[in-house]
Amino acid sequence: MTTASTETLTVAPEHAGTRLDRVLAAGLSELSRTRLKALILEGAVTAGGRVIDDPGHKVKAGDVLTVAVPPPEPAEPEGENIPLSILFEDDQVIVIDKPAGLVVHPAAGHQTGTLVNALIAHCGASLSGIGGVMRPGIVHRLDKDTSGVMIVAKTDKAHKSLSEQFADHGRTGDLERGYLAFVWGVPDRPRGTIDAPIDRHPHSRDKMAVRQGGREAITHWEVKERFLGSNGKPIASLIECRLETGRTHQIRVHLAHIGHPILGDETYATGYRTKAALLPKSAQAALQALGRQALHAYLLVFEHPVSGKIEQFQSELPVALARLRDSLSAG
Image (cartoon, rainbow, N blue to C red):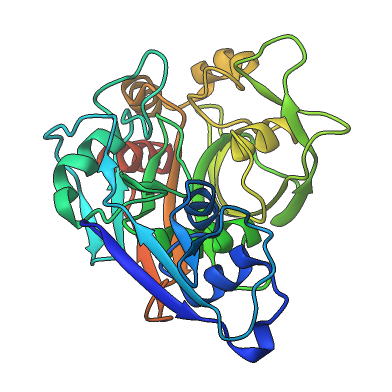
């Protein structure tokens, strides 16, 4: 919706006595319930010509509900011409292959040069408004220095559907997120599950940590490759991770928690820097050139918010990570 519009809905008998916001959410699926609640409070909803500004108002059978939807406001962040690697795009969603170093959303210290700035410029008028603002709908994030597949909503309807899928984390739906991580050491078994709650670090507010009483966090992992050091002993491994929850820094914190932090992670692998000397020389050079945590979001599977089709997208290892993999294998 790029211009003002009016939506009309007649209350069916079976919905008599139901809350106004619920009836509208069920009948106008292209608008999120949050957006509809805001419109009700703003006085944009009428029943039989009378303004109803209470989301909990109980409707009557036969009520004709009218919603005046204003055009979306311009996004606060400005669009910037930043190149994007686009894997898929239609009028509902856009799937991109995010490079390492690109911040997802403007924040303190990163007001410009973000993925949001790039998407505002790229999508233009095709952004129909998330919550009444012409902006991309961020339903999940990747850390600045994590590369890989991301999906962004372009409409309220897509944002609502994708948010529900990511909140469910594939427990009952088809959502899948797969990551590849190069870690220090080799686990003592081929696969496993880390079920450990995560919260803010008690002494460092920019870090997360496994803490009792934290939010539930579950990561499933499987060893894909094992690498030997210059002394002929196991030094590192390539692990595939699947997320069942989506906490900040979850994979990085969980892998460090079981004693296998990610190579190049300056936040959670500080005690492993001396191990770099045991890597083959070519791997040492590749890790130094990488300059970030060796983590890549290689897989994303989701249900398209309109067609219902199960979509799957994969991203190959970026050049720097592929070089690290080759140099570790050569050792």
